[in-house]
Length: 294
Image (spheres, one colour):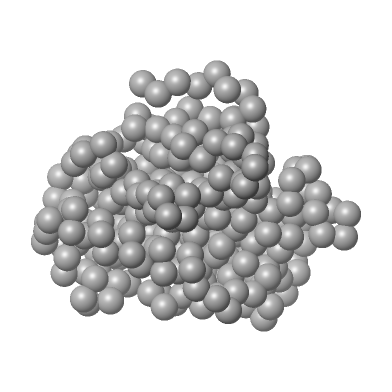
């Protein structure tokens, strides 16, 4: 019997937070054209263990790895991260993976969320783009998606187990570590991620965004009980809706490698639905409006 659990991985790479969500599989069908099998690989009934291997170095292109292993000027690296994320944001040739309210199915969320995808140029997987109009100013949205304590993500997202700022370089540049809960009684381990996170503004396009990518830190090695995941270039881009200052158009760019024993097909089959769930939970948190930064 195939295990009916799969990972629904919301990777808010621009916020430096990779959140692993788990849910029952309601359908064996694929969310992306030809990207997933109709049935999923068996996950054996043993606890997934964290590994001491340097998974980041194994998966990253050599030219990008060098700058992360040796602690270079973070501001210089942040410039490269922001440019790469912006290029992905502006790129074309996306394919539709899922639309939240397609065919009358609103997925318990009344807003339309469009999820698109294409092959990643950075690892053996896909980069995803999720789009939605949110009823909140752009600056406020960014504050809600940044990791705690710099932002509010850890206060409204129950999938976040740990969230910490390792180093604050300046007001718009931090190194953060975030971790998720394990699930299925430990069969699937907690993931953690260490990211360089930068906030950028493009006034000529009225864009405010967060961009990030995983880096190496000697003072933040992998811990027992966690599998160290890798976030590749990503970002969350917020643009005010013309004529409606209390609304913004949010585009979330995500590409991640959860590493460990989880098959990529299982992870990616769940991503479109999970990205819709992210917008639903973010919208609910913004409406609640009772959160404050620490």
